[in-house]
Image (cartoon, rainbow, N blue to C red):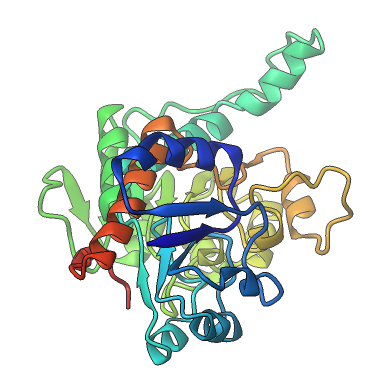
Length: 329
């Protein structure tokens, strides 16, 4: 099987090259550029393409992949809301993903964001570098004894729940399908989750139902001084409403590893660019907001798991026995 990898970063390539010798019969070529209608012709002659979370895989792109006889789209991530699945089904292209590579990696990053905004680590770091050892403006709260609200208790949400429980927090959660293994979690309604949480962490997929699940109505139901963390998908939160809530002093802190307009920014160095829209700049202007660039997954363990599972998906597909639980369509 020949696979063309789009949008490869050095750390991606290094990880895949480490496990590649274990998968004989698989040929790999790497591209730095992402897939688009202008770069999809490069897939001609390949059996599969491998894409990542920022790739925009719309119907025209999928149609061109079909014309090039590409039979498989390998997502080296868990999310797939960026793929036109109806088009993939129409053209008979199988889409496979990596459903759970290292839930602890993302949960740990979510908790790190919560700690950082609560104890103002980002501000303290800058102050001390400038020889300012004043403690003014750095007061936080104890998480011990507070209530952590987990929105979605799949693998990542469950890992976050365990981490918060481990530091002495009371855990409440909402999920349509409660996790029976989390016997320390109290499942509640969405409204109750919003009203009771001191720390609210989002770990649900992006669907039509969850799009802008955090809007101004939801924000108004939250406690004053709540800490909000999102390491799932940017569009779970209405950015305009989030900014309104911040200006109303609703939040003690906001930690975002994902946000609505990240598509053109994620994993790219744009320090010399003029940004197309103002949402990111507006969010970064607030002293109680920390944004990271979709790096929650970025640990050595997670990268190895992504590489192994992606190539296992390719191998199983080429042998006619694709791993069912990793198939999207």
